[in-house]
Amino acid sequence: MTSINIRRAGEADARSLTDLSYTTFWDAFAHHPKNAPDDLAHYMRQAFSIEQISEELADERNIFLIGELDEKPAGYAKLILDSVEPSIVARKPIELSRLYSHQEYLGKGVGQDLMDACLSIAREGGHDVMWLGVWEFNPRAQRFYEKNGFHVVGKHIFQLGTDPQTDLLMQLEL
Image 1 (cartoon, rainbow, N blue to C red):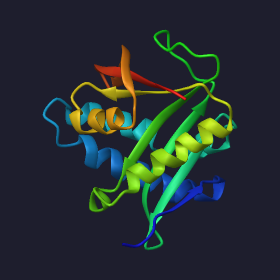
Image 2: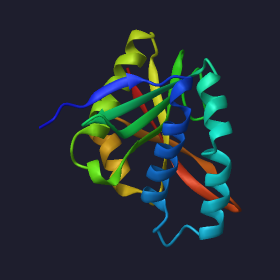
Image 3: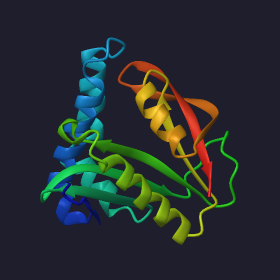
């Protein structure tokens, strides 16, 4: 098996990261019957524009990682430093805001390698808790996070267009 290269993204990666973000989110959620096409399109236009991704890359609180397989972007992760929700109890939290793999690379270890890299960054940074929000109707992702030691500690609303969706808040003590 070809090894997965994980690297930190920079501002020069804005276009490829925008494309990767858009494609992986679409692949993950576009065909779910709970997601109205208009709500999904509205959210994606806002969240995954080149302007928005460039702004996020420039924000020093954000850390983006890109996983490459065969020299092609296969997945990515986004960490947010010092981000917290009311259900999260931590001295120095870090949020795993996004972790997505291209459909063609599912099952090839991209997600796990990205998770491992995120956990290393969190531990090296002295963070005591990593947390995330995962859609209540995404059992595959929930199982992945549980396998990595995360447990449910609460819920919050994720606004997808006009649809207020429930995310489970999960955290891992580091």
